[in-house]
Length: 278
Image 1 (spheres, rainbow, N blue to C red):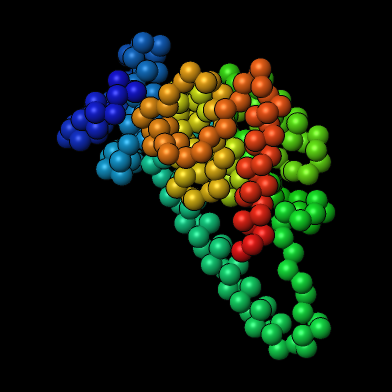
Image 2 (image 1 turned 60 degrees about the vertical axis):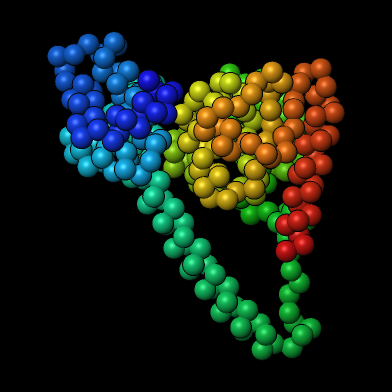
């Protein structure tokens, strides 16, 4: 059910669809393993649907109270699931709104500085510096790349990370411990501070709602994305295909890792060049 978009839409559109699922989640008389936990995952899947689905979930006060309670627990399964539901139905919208406000404030400040500088003699004007030019030009809280991946692909993604960091040219955000289970706010903040998002996808990436949350956020926020395909036989479907279709993709294979890595560097350099032209 959780992977079938048509069924998810029918549940969300039904008058009592969400409310019936909600009752199953917090009804203590129902079995946890076979009913309550799977139903929570179905609600998570539905939260990745349309705006109407998110609104219905968010309007169910008893359900959202339960979700917020679960998000504060240390449960390795229910905690991340609840966090993603909370993010999709409420927090993501608020986070983006805050980012927009901060950007407007920053641009207004830059406009004031520019107006002041234009009054100065030309020899006092400072030259433009680019984030990409020199390692010491980077600020401590920004990254050149963020690697989005599924934990099952940690080995090859770790190799990519190690090669990139060994060059000393890049600051990289790579969550070695949690991978696809990052807290939504931490994921979004890292993406906002990263110039490029490396989406390393596979069949496991497609199945993960944590990975979907990250990839869709990158797409929604118009981040620069470089696609890395980790399984040569895998053909993306559903939401993942919506993101990767008709876009250039680098295939990484153990047998030709060096060639794939060289192609990746070419892509990164291409993005750097475009950034410095602006």
